[in-house]
Image (cartoon, rainbow, N blue to C red):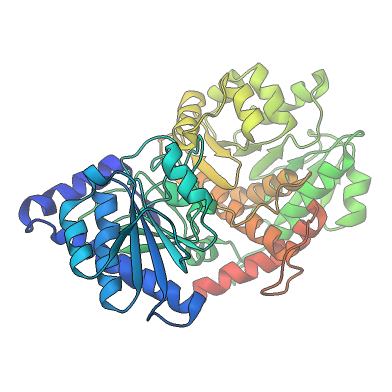
Length: 479
C-alpha cells in the first residue's frame, strides 16, 4: 500500500537525521532530487536545458532553501535561473549563498520563464498565499513545480481557503503527505525523493492498482454461484425505478455470484438483467451474504420499516442514498448492529448523519463518524475517504470527476455490495469498489480510447465500463 504521513510524523522522522548528519546535508539531498525533476520537466517541455529559464519563488525557511539549492544545481547545468525573494531578510542564507555563487540572479520580476519552482511555503505553512505571493503566482503562464506541496494548500488536510498554487508536478521529500492525495488536482504528478527517513506506520493508506486487482474476486475451480457470494439489493421504487436497475446491474457486473433483487421494480430490473433472481418483497428474497439498501427506495414509513428489517439481519449491509436519510433519523439502528455495516454518504448525507458539516479535515471527520456509529464509512468525493470503526483509513483518488453524475452512487453501492458478499471486509470492499468505479467513469468518458479528451457521461455508460475497469486492474496484478 501507499502510505501518507502527517507533518508531525515527518518531523519526528527527520529529527534523528538532523541531529546526526552535518548541517545542510538533508536539505542538499532534497534539493538535488528537486533539481533532477525540474531538469527532466524542462527537457519534456522545451527539449533542452542550456539557456532555458527557470524562476524560483522563494519564501522564508527551509522550503525556500530547497528551491535555492536546487537553483544552484540547475545553474551549474546551464539553466538560466532567477529567484524572487518574497521575504529577503528571512531567505535561507546558505541556500542563497550557494545560489549566487553558482551564478543565479535575484530579481523582482517573474521574467519569461519556461518553468517556475514554487518554494514559497513548506509543510508547516498554514492558510492561503499572502497578497504579494498570490500576485506573483497569478502572473505565471508556464508549468509550476512545487517544492513538497503547492503553497497555500494545507499539508494535513488538502484544504484551500484562498489563493493557492496549482502545480503540474509536486516534488516531495522522504514521505508522501496527506495533501498529495487529498488535494491531488492541486499537486499534479507527485514525485517522491528518498532522503533516508525511517518511517513508522502511516496515518492512512491507499491501495495500489495491483492490490485492487489481486483483491478482486474471480471464480476458482471449485466455485459455484453460491460460493462466490449472494448479494441482495433493495433499491428503486415506483418513483425511481432506475435506481434499482443501476444498483442491481452493478452488482451483476462486479462478480460471478448470484444477485437477488427485492422491490417494486422487479420487471424493470429483469428486462435489463434476466440473470437476477427477483421478488417483490424482502421476505420473499431468500438468503444472501450481504445486502445493499437505500438507492431510490424512498423515505416514507414503509421504506423506514424495510430499512429496519434489513438492519436487523446478521449479514453485512451497505446503506446508501435514501437509506442514509432514514438512518439519520434513527442512527441507533446501526449502533446496535453486530454484523459489518458500511455507510456511503456524500457530503450532504454525511452532515445529516453527523449533525455537522464535513469541514476541512475529511479524514478526521470520517474517522469520527465511523467511531461514533460503530460502522465503516465511505465519504464520497474526488478523493474518497473510507474509515472503519477501528480508525483505519484507506483513500482512493478518482483521477477525474467524470463520476459526478446522477445515478453514479447507485452503481457504486451495487459494486461494493457484491464485493462485500464475496467475503471482503467493508474497508476492502469500499476501497476496491471505489477504485474500479472511478476507473470505469474515466474509461466511459474517454470512450474506451487512450489519450483522447473525455466527454460528459451518465451512469449507464459508467456501468457499462465496470467490467473493463476490472480487467485493467486485474492486469496490474499479473505484472
